[in-house]
Amino acid sequence: MPSFEIIQTYEKLFQGIWVKTVPTLGVTSFAAMLERALFVAQQKYLFLSKIKVRSDGVSLDELKKPSLEPVSEADLENGLREYVTTLVSILAKIMGEVISGEVKKLIDSMVIAKTL
Image (cartoon, rainbow, N blue to C red; front, side):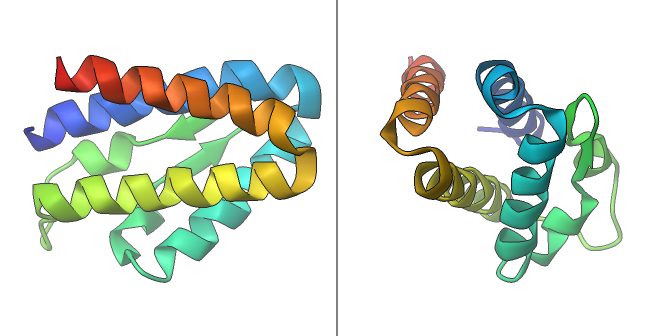
């Protein structure tokens, strides 16, 4: 899948997670979890530092811009997946299975749609 499509897929995924999670946790709490998950994922994938957590969600805009250090499609996919996986792990620890189960369903539906 080309880089632009990978980014679009994850933008939709993050927006869906935001919509499902913010009503329960609130913007401030969920943004803190997003920041923590991003910090953890950045330890392995440095290019994720281009991602910004804002008061209206996650911005992948900087990943779309040309870079002096291009990221392969495989690394892009793996890094974004690491971020989402870390986020779900944090959600599961804090909120238990209820919200993390809803987020997992959303992730699964995005993955299935992407492969069709």
